[in-house]
Image (cartoon, rainbow, N blue to C red; front, side, top):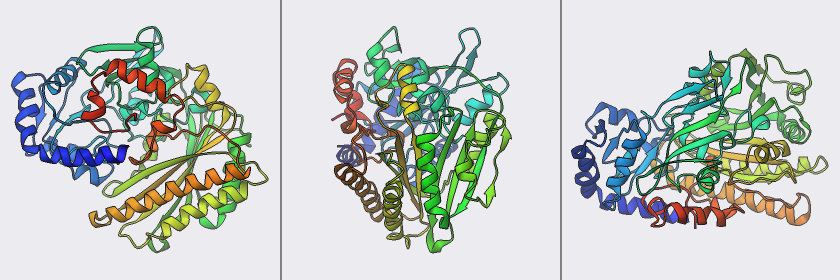
Length: 496
């Protein structure tokens, strides 16, 4: 299980701290494998450690930070790591709050910061994107080209982990997961070789990387489909918490009845200590300068007291969404997937889900700096169909039902509250799974395949255990990593 592996890393990496300092870090420096090796006394090291969304990740201190800027330099580092037993991690944007996924105590950290290429090839209508970019940086580089790629909904999310986890986008109803839009992965394998994975070469690896996380290699470049892109419309709507029944009904109906693939939403509820904030905040997107009047009518008719939606560039919309990034706190993310309830029972089912989130949050409302949120992310049948049309992926959704992916977030300030918040996070996602299972058993929800969304997963959740493609995932890992290099030497969701 991921939880046992995380505890193993904590103990193992701490014990090996002094050994690692004199091993991987010095070996890389002495070999001139890469130009930039930073230690704890450098400004770059400190800046990198401050560039996590969760301060709990920044609290962990790598023995050094390595900054490769080519696939060959990454390969050279992997070859050195093959000569020792050091644990290590690879970091892209620092969004994932799970400790030891992209953060480490006492082992080397490979930052992809300098693997930051964004190159548009008009002849092939592709864009080569490095994993060291954030999505607003990608969109800024492309904003005058008339094209975009399928990427994150908040600008400061990094490219690397997002794509390998699937990647849910405002453009997903139109083009599928971000991972479905990859033409080729450039990958450094466990033995230090560099390969290209596509639909014509290493095809098993190509599929496994689309939702398989870091179990197969270090991706040093993504060649992505370039889609025509003009101005978009979007922003935020804010509602009082008293509108909860109407909001839940509206997101249920939007998930089932919206047929406009240009429209996308995220609907979040937010609660903070002492009721200082008790709101619904929506992120709206339309792929065009003006949405049809009826697309978001279910929401606007409820009566938001803030409406910041406007016509703008895609870059401006993504960078504008960065206000939602709350850095300087410790936090957790967890997730659950539910089949969509029908209109008759929707109020009961979604209301029960909301109440469970609310009650769990209020049980820890005295924790210093607490912010609790739940995001309802529609996963309609059209996204599953589009993902299949775009070549499929490891997640392998079918279009038998509409679904909603729920994301649960807690942020707080103090280390001493970590155990309390870990327990609350488990109560939240575990209780939600029980509610869903009970509703399926009683017939109020349809039976359906409900995989977890890796990008929102908590380290204790069994991502691969919920995939019906797990046997393929395991077989592909044994082909490309027969000695279990990625499985035992670095963090992340692992195949059992």
